[in-house]
Image (cartoon, rainbow, N blue to C red):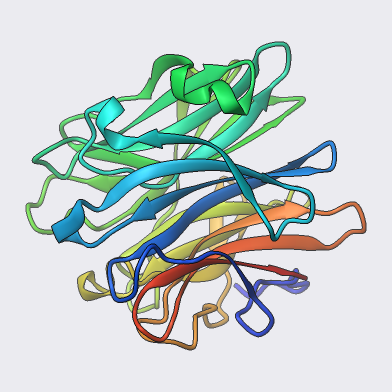
Length: 295
């Protein structure tokens, strides 16, 4: 499939660094971000990661901004508070009549398993001490992480990244499932909607990272061709056709530097019709910065 009317996509050409990597060199990453615009304020939540020798995904930060570029941290959650070996992509969602909810991707120590937890509080600043609830436990066969969550008149939707655990050494494979909910805590699984394509750049797996448009429903997703490209995902587009997402045939967007990673893209619709993107992008020394651009 080729998408006839391709929406604007993020690129490195005029990207600005929002959060630099915590240090130089591979394994130092700032990213896996999600972002929203609420009443003129940008809210960004992201993961800070260090190399395997320093503990992987160490903290999740919640920050705010008036211009979408300069952010002030307002809250931080450490993985130790959840008994997690690592954090991956978080999501921040305002919940009318309740406050704010932070979803956290948590790694089970000593395994390849992941689960999703949450914190709910009246304000973003209060989230580290908010009400904690398990959202999705995964199971012995499946690790779950990196949710993309949207809300609307028809309720809540979650695009969930799933890693099969049945073949030791191949747990990096990934697919995306769609779930629905009335409250953002109890979810109904609607089935797999996106998977890798043999022989393509996303052969090893496909993970939805952002909803681009609702009519027609189009998403950004990232993927990789093989196990060796783990953590170096690049980004493409897929459209809802029938009962699942179908990938566009054009080449993925990449960073021009080091491992080429251009992943975990988040899209924020702007009042003027443009979109502000946030992406975890590889830089020349192998570290990953969190960058932004407007299209």
